[in-house]
Length: 351
Image (tube, rainbow, N blue to C red):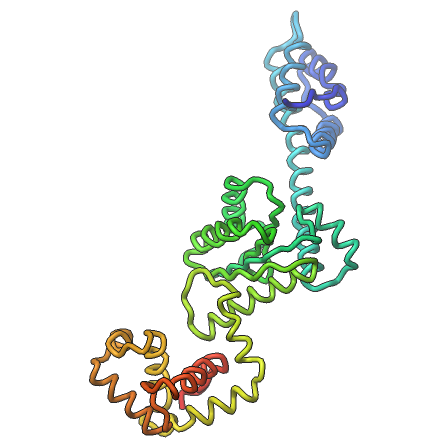
């Protein structure tokens, strides 16, 4: 049920209508300014614009001038007054939206970079529907373009989530050109739907979902996991539309000791640089072979080669490295080295 519009937002309206109808004059600058100010106050008080316009029309009907007064002048006064009132209302709403966006962006920055004490951060989080004492998970979506708060894509995704779940203590925002969704850890379906909507809205963008963690630090940890998953997917050329950070934990572990990984790559795959055409074709062959479950026919199809040509390449790899990709005992070392090469971007120059 809509709230009744207080008389203060119609202050002087009937008197103004009668005076303009009798004299035929237009509203003065001060009078229009006063109507705009009333519109701003009504917006700040949270009244709906439809109810406010209806109240103005009802007041105009009750105070409609009679006798020799001009109907045209009266209608012109109503038009000017309501237009000025609505202008003030819209101006206040735009300001409120800008302030809300700025506050949300500042909160996201403080939350993800720890620039506020935990007590104050928890109080601010409740304003945006988050209870930081609980576990939360973060999903990050990237597309072909960078996105900001007011862009069509974030608004489209937000509308879809609100239509599906309503208010479920979910926070959507943008960060560094990516879409960001923070949701309670037990509501996995929210992030699943976010991933689906973001993938569609960004024309096939990629979404990574971090694991759920408790507390303010848990949000940061989940966010960093999602970012790491996107980075790993880029390096490994993973094209899955939705990435679960939990499924990619092995890669950060492998990359943690960078020097050891570098030594493994150079020792195991370094001899491939002696091949005609460099290491890249043979490295791609190993990648396709392992990605296809070591099925030669499938790997050959992915590389647009004949099975015979693929077999020749595998034999060449065996001869150069001394490790046989078809031997289970030696396959693990080769496959780990191939993953390391992707993570390290080796070979950078194709040699």
